[in-house]
Amino acid sequence: MKNLLNRIWKIVMALLVVLCIVLIVLKLFGVSVILVKGDSMMPTMQDGQLFLATRVDPAKIERGDIVTARLETGDGITLITKRVIGLPGEEICIGFSTIWANGDWVQEPYLEWPGWNDFGEYDASFTLGPDEFYLMGDNRRGGTWCGVITSEQIIGRVIGK
Image 1 (cartoon, rainbow, N blue to C red):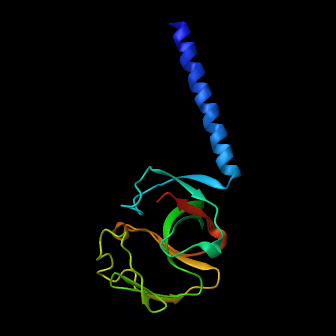
Image 2: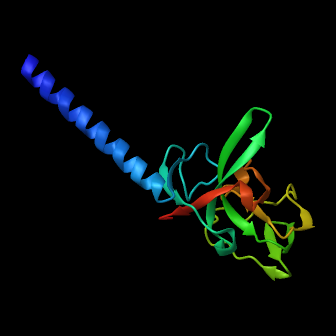
Image 3: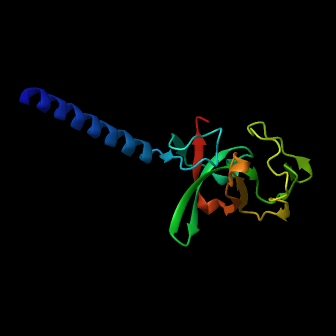
């Protein structure tokens, strides 16, 4: 019995070492492992799922990309994973479950609930600065965070989604 426990212990330790090596190599190549917390990106991402995010030049970020960013809050730094809705310099208008960027309707096929803004909670019109992006979660009826971030806050773009 003692011999079996020793073998299991050695296997577990070997797996942990391999996992650490893989994570270090990923980090060296600019890849981060992201844990999704909450339901603001449902149905695209579920609470507790793991995804990979890679560093990205902000100039290569496109509308519809999912990014991970840092937000400074009263409790410190919070990491968020949201979808890019508005790009630098764009005029964004939001009203009655519709988003317009520079006068063009932003189609959002990934949304499960088309009537997410029936009561006008998000009605707004604003112009993004030359270094700003507008992010929203996919679960618009789930009280999702949305707002403006700068390119310096972006950690990376989610890959594989």
